[in-house]
Image (tube, rainbow, N blue to C red; front, side, top):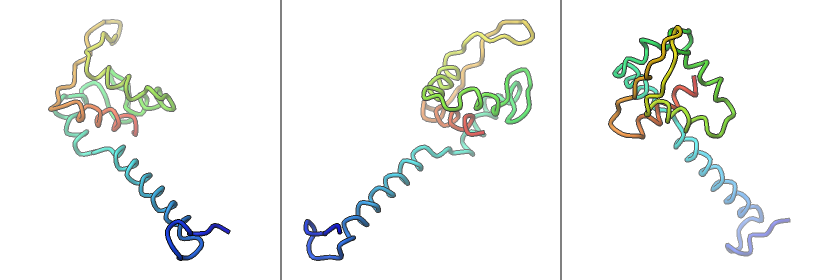
Length: 122
């Protein structure tokens, strides 16, 4: 039996409950920190005209967000690679023609990171 001798004369499982509560609170904060602001991401997509070449679920000149998410699924560096792609204007090929991918214009890196998370969760 686990005793609560460190914190006083409470119920023997009080210490375990306290640890469980702290653990769950930490998990909740972590999940909230990783939450996607969908409205902000979709506004950035519209402002940067990403939907000219991309769609959530349909192939256009560029891959769908679903296809991009599948490409990076399970990869620890997926979000970082997508962030780099969105911010550096790499060369891409469309119908055999090479061109620069448009850089995302945003107020800050956090907005672009949110967009990357949005794409990866589609």
